[in-house]
Length: 365
Length: 259
Image (cartoon, rainbow over all chains, first blue to last red; front, top):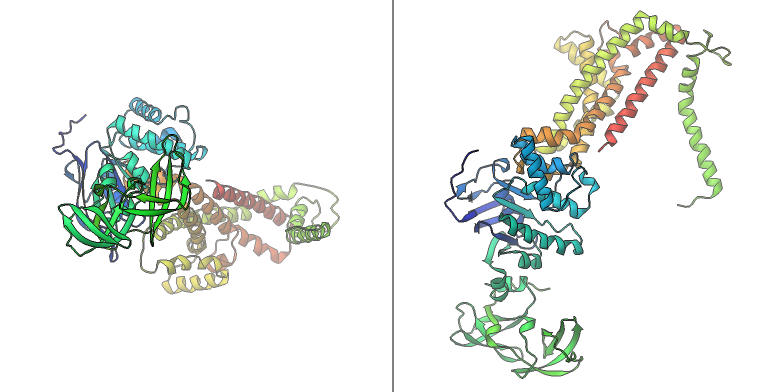
């Protein structure tokens, strides 16, 4: 066995301005990412955002027109898939239909011509890692979707790759199994310590699974951050509207006092915090999350238009003149939801409302 | 669709009629091959296997059979090899005229044998290639090719691209991917196509008439004997061919349905 020199970088995968064009559209546009060793990293975006193209660039199924790709600090830009120490869990699992579970999982080891006994040991370990003991003689067609998914995982993990790429691995599963497999994936990543790069359009998956998330749009990386940072301090309006629910009040920036902004909205003046330099007088949007709206004495009065009881909380649609607001109130013992038509005082802490320059990138739902 | 009892009966009889119309001639030949009279007439009084014995002792039928097997197997090999490669080319690479190629490939099946025959005869004549079993083989391969091509092409179309990617992803070179993943998935389609190409070649007569030299294939031999009328040996030979062809076609269907 050859001893590999210790990689000189803490990064598992690095993309340096990787660009892939199809005709005139750039599916991946100057993507630069540093993915740390042992990290659960997610590429999040809607379809056509370039997340899958980026994954395929890392896997070696596509080659960038520009830029470089490094794995463990080594330039692999022009290496084809079979020369990269990276395995993929495909969206459709891509299990070999003529092989049983054992031979599917053994595939990578067989190609490496490992000794029989070694292969058996590794395959059994991988199969037990994904809890499929006893099914090793089954053909893929005799397995449920969740089981096929586990076989795909075992097959990709069997020879301990440097990086595991997962392309929307949960999208073909029904909702109940999805949550279950999601938790298992997280545990699997923690136990193996392998770098996971995960592609999804589902923000809930991204937030619950990932150490860090790259939000993508039109082939570009818009923000790379931890789930908490993404949710609480979105870098721009697009990320703010893509992740979680929020109210976006259009208005004009009246004045600034340090970070504290006064914004004229349709029904008066509200306060918020600016996240970047904005000139006074600019058109802005005030982003406020529903759970940050307090139904208590504050700067305006609102009318309850709709009340949705959610058990652990109550969601309100409130209106104040032409403006509607979505608010979420955590249920407290003994309190009853406000009925429709109630007039309430409402407000928020100015730090909880983020003011962005309006670039028209709010997603409307 | 709901059918009344009467409609069902009418449809049933109609279907039966069509089947009888198609298959009675075959049944008659099979029946007469066991009749102990030289004259082909009903009713059949005595049964015998003599005609089969005579057929087995007939040297010219033997030579014909041997030639047919030689032609059919070589043409099949050729068609299978080229058809499989062609199907891959069309499936995996975009090249100029791909769609034209895909449609043009099936023309030999649609063309009347006489057109293929005349065209190839004039080609071989112009090129100065002497007629013989070799030219017959080439002629038969031209319609065997699209048969295999279609079968393999259809199977490849159902083979997800991700299987190949998964194989490469796990460390397989393109050659290893072909041997371990693609070939096992299309093997039965290749076999089905080959069996069908073999059957078509084995009983082909029109193209053969144009392209053969002095060697006769089995169908040609039988055809040439018809000038002297149907003989019971021919009935026996035809029954044997019918049985063999039916087995091959059934096998082909079985393989093309597999996986």
